[in-house]
View 1 (cartoon, rainbow, N blue to C red):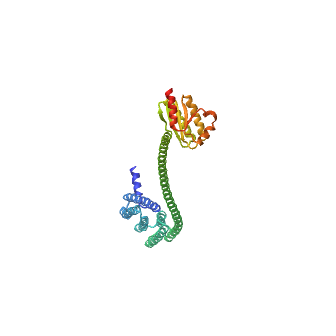
View 2 (cartoon, one colour):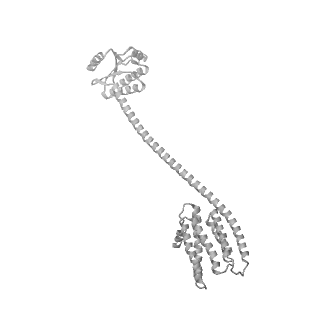
View 3 (cartoon, helix red, strand yellow):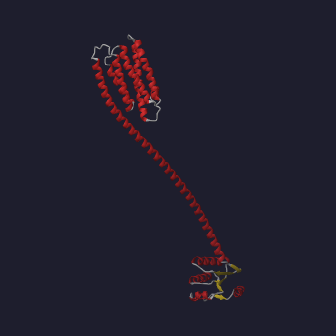
Length: 367
């Protein structure tokens, strides 16, 4: 587990560009592998002749390899790759010169090109290829006097150069294609991030609008409830006022223990007619009145419904043991009362209140 954490730390590249991070990881991986090989070669060379020369040759490679890893981890992919390819070319040139043996070393000049495939941009790959050809030419010049038991130097260098050209061509095309694909991927990723940010912004704005609308609806609901409560209170007050007005519009005056005077004023609708009838009959019952005087002086207009109401009051009061008398009947009201037929013939009618009181007072005293 600790080794895994160390490797993760080793391959951590500090750069925002995904392509730089990819190339940096490739540099770290290749360099780490080559440094491990150098360490292994150094250990094995102890048991061989000339180990000091080998150690002197490989030690700088290991030190510079660690420097290349450091550059790559800091995000300097081009510098790290350039240092790695440089020390590889130096090693390929120095090894045959120090050992006086060329053999197939020119073919190993493909190694810097292969490293450039995965660590450099297409332009950097061309620079690395030119450096490989220059190093190969330098090696040819330095080792021209070394005897060969294998194929002639010209054949070896010619074949190596041909392979280098082929590998460079293929590598450049592949690197260019990969670079374009990575660039397209980065653009797509950038557009995706921008679209995600736009969608997130729109979602935040929508959420804010929904929250504001919800708050507004909630406030409107509170206001509506407040208005409903106010309206209910006003209706209750209105009902109370109407009840008070109805009570004031129909004053019931007890003139005697058994005599009630009720002045009727204004006009009558169905609701008021019903209220008058209910209140008068309730008053007759509660006071146990024997005489009910209805003063019609204030009634300007009496229609058929009003006359029918008076007829019902007369009939109901008679059942309760009370006698009804009319006071101050106007001509308009008289016509409505006459239209009721003989039902109201037995009802006493007086010109004014004084005459009605005198007449019924004598009747009460006699009884």
